[in-house]
Figure 1 (cartoon, helix red, strand yellow):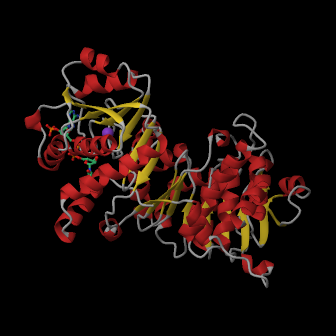
Figure 2: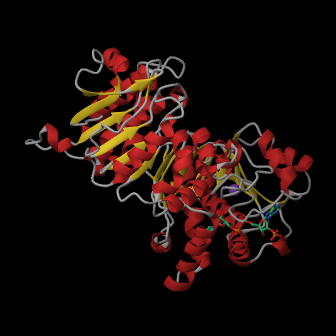
Figure 3: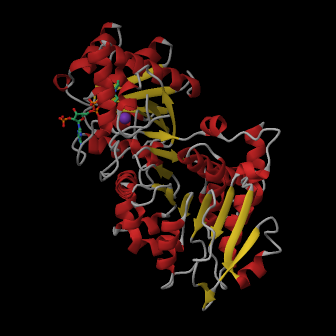
Length: 506
Ligand SMILES: NC(=O)C1=CN([C@@H]2O[C@H](COP(=O)(O)OP(=O)(O)OC[C@H]3O[C@@H](n4cnc5c(N)ncnc54)[C@H](OP(=O)(O)O)[C@@H]3O)[C@@H](O)[C@H]2O)[C@@H](O)CC1
Ligand SMILES: [K+]
């Protein structure tokens, strides 16, 4: 499923109107009807509803929704929060259709009166502002939004919560806190940002028949990676499959004081389906791992002060290599990353301490012929970019895209919404996962899963999207059944992969 900026939505709308010849009025009719159909699914006709209508086309949708629900026997009061002369174009057309159908509306005067009208209502439909919102919220919408946020019944927003920007990088001034949002045609970017997603409440998308031609022709596209995508692309294991077919992978990392990270990455890679796995680390870590990661083979690396001191002896001809987990932040790490960048023949995944060591080597990324994958959490990404974490999270899609394109890397920016960006600037978001994963080791497990996926999948982007989705989904299954967000451990995720795979293969 694609998701879009406000501009991409307007472009799609224009394409449908100008090139296909569908009139704007018809699009609005389709939008309002689709939203009303959806509302009918979860609001009983015994409830008392009010629709708040703003001056723009979001308000126009509101007129169609109100008319449709009234025709279907719902008790709906319509309150128009703009002067009649302010309502223009398609919205004015649907205001007239509403009136000509024999229905009436009241005009918003002040919050006191509104409070009076809404006292007995169960559901408030918010069609005040849509994707056209700009800047600080002006009167009367600022009072209206505060009012809606004090309403005790259910608030359902149309397209997006009024006042909330559709795009990233825009400050939220004031916005409706919706219980539910019925999104028109495509989710907007703000549904996938940590500071704005919660305003939507639960949301679902209704299709109004707009063609995806415009979005598909964009240089860079943004899509949600969903369960169906995983089912369609997960590598099939045929009956004659053998270990060599599922890839040969190598994990480089670990230090005497940190055997856990690399243990988790390795076990996760094996559980995620890696055919053959080698772990290259210091002798003491091998001793610690040998009994827990029995399926792997080991390469002993020279050490100094408990850290790996050199990786020159490593065989770099693996299908995929992951480096950095539990490697420590020390002076030699930067040189080792440089060696890995130069010598790795297959895909190279850099995680954790490896990312800190990469900071001084960024220019070497461009010289690589094979895929390089970076898996930062926001702190690591902010360090790579030299920006603060809040600044990064204010526009994570834009920052990831600029970085991935400039350095020709795949970026997996981890978070509640994990963003996967290709060197071409295409982006996916995965929405699986829960707060139980915000714990040490969770990233190490993801690195292992991604390594295994890259070794087996057809394309790097599919591998990264599937791996990220599976990681989060496993946590969701575990929290639903055996665990809670408090006690869930990263190592539980590794054991939990069995459930996820079984569910996917059913
Ligand atoms: N594909 C599509 O595009 C389709 C779109 N559709 C629907 O149309 C919606 C977009 O409609 P839209 O463009 O008219 O914008 P919308 O948000 O309703 O109103 C903007 C008005 O609000 C005002 N305003 C702005 N900022 C403000 C502020 N801070 N504080 C106060 N006021 C502010 C601004 O007034 P102005 O500043 O210009 O005086 C402007 O007139 C979209 O979300 C969807 O629901 C569907 O029907 C069909 C397909
Ligand atoms: K709205």
